[in-house]
Length: 306
Image (cartoon, rainbow, N blue to C red; front, side, top):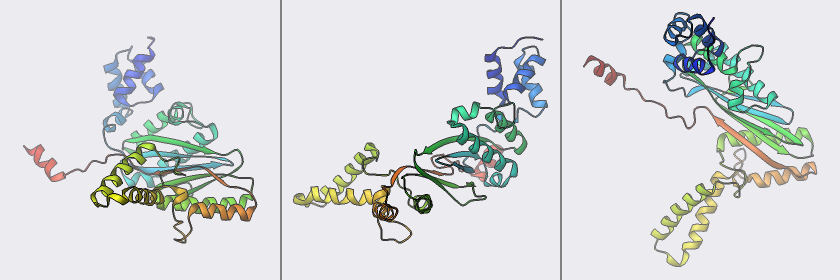
């Protein structure tokens, strides 16, 4: 049997989307001839993923898993919302998010790790799923949170199960206080974050580029008022309003519409007799940042007829 190189296997995988071992075996069977190997994989139905790889996948599921003081969010995309209701797809996301948490894997290391209970990788398992379900899919992103002392709390919005849905939130609260009270606070904060979509925990944490952009906008707005003696005050006032919209601690709690989040934290800290620090939060909304294609089917058919 001919010895095939890793580069040849990679090249075949790139062309077909087939798994590592399937690609290797196909090349060995075809004595290293990549074209014959492509045909062989196609005949076996293992090359179907390649035909779908250019199609936009912006649906799917957000998976969440919490293990004591650490947690993880994973986004796995598919082309249609219908796939999110597929039991095989749900099982895959649930297995992958748990594996990512327990092994503390980032997205690249997760893809190359062995799939739980299998000899092939997490990415190979997804490739097989593409062939079975018939849609392009993508293991898009993974993010972890943890605290040395305290709690990590999750919340899933538009959920199809307790750990799978369309929006996933993790909140890490560092504190030596009562765990039940912290869990309750964490859940309230997670629900608030799902609704209010803050960009940072504090003003100091806010991306300087975001602040600079907003400052330029409000400066132009202030200058257009013609109130030259009050421009600095107008700028400061509008920036303060901006912070109240996008900074978690400065936002008004959506549950009561009155209390600032920083005041809520101070109140609960006093009740439990221990300081509380929001160490980190993560918010994944399904498909955010993915440019979705809009297809004009009438125009598409007309173009084909021409």
